Length: 427
Ligand code: GDP
Image 1 (cartoon, helix red, strand yellow):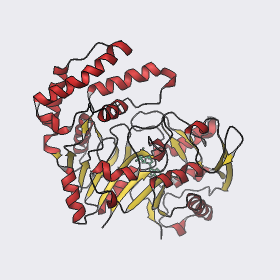
Image 2 (spheres, helix red, strand yellow):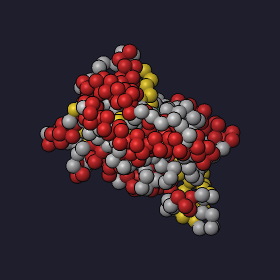
Image 3 (cartoon, protein in one colour):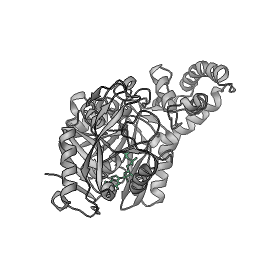
């Protein structure tokens, strides 16, 4: 029996969706425990290619229960429209449960997110404008709306009214926007509540019971360790914890329930959005890596923004795996590097004051940090058909062993392409 957290060791986009889609085959539950529709998981399987932003990645197996946990930022419209899109493309009806304790992203959150990005202009943190930061700010300011609130008009009116008392001051005085009225928002939310009703459930009780019955549960993280608000590159972070330590809290399980922490690591680096990124490359070199990673969707799933790319960063990844508490690593996208004669990897940082370090520094010291690069031999061939580690060219094997040594955590899975079957379990 296992409860496994599948989480990102980097900036996100490591391939967590693919790993969850594959491992969900042997699971009873797949649970989203944080974040909302602000990051996408790309999944390629027998039904086609999908970009999920709100649905858990276990939705392709009708026997798996997919849970939107209490810690998530529920974008109800995204959830329902993604579900419709799946059905329209021949995916069997997913078994979906939404926690009655999850909170709902409100239209005012999306509005405030967009207005704040405009206000910040060049100083913006690269928000996806899905309302996530205002949502979590309001949740912790006790101004949020829980799913269970959607079924009581008077209570909802009171909650929304209380929220708008504060938000309308901001809207009118800071952003020069007209104030919002509670009634139309309440009507919209009551409608959403009706559409969500078939899925609303006490998922905490359900998962606690499933845990007691020793049923296999996957907790699916969004984004990566470096976007965590406490341990990541704050303020270029997201607004909920991306760490496995938070997974049982956001899912509604005991803290000691998580037995396996699979950190997903990319064979090179990529990042959507702003913030320090020491091993980043630019110009033609970056363009080539971005194009080679084309199948790896080097354009943000939610935003369509070109992803920033760079070489594998041992400093950031080791740190990412450490704060995740990784018990194993799934290494993805190794195939993408097959075009290079020799492959640079970042093994240390030189900070602005000249200090050289292999420890990931605080954000205040990251600005101006330069990568210390080392070259590893490339393998210059297509490895997307490889079925075992032994089949890989020696240089690819050496690259994987090097990464494992740098990260200090066992690599248990190796992915050599975006499809389900392009994955090998390592001894
Ligand atoms: P997630 O948010 O961590 O699930 O990652 P994304 O879906 O945003 O980005 C990962 C991208 O890499 C997707 O386009 C996947 O289809 C793709 N992908 C996953 N594993 C591999 C792999 O081993 N090789 C290649 N070429 N692409 C992969």
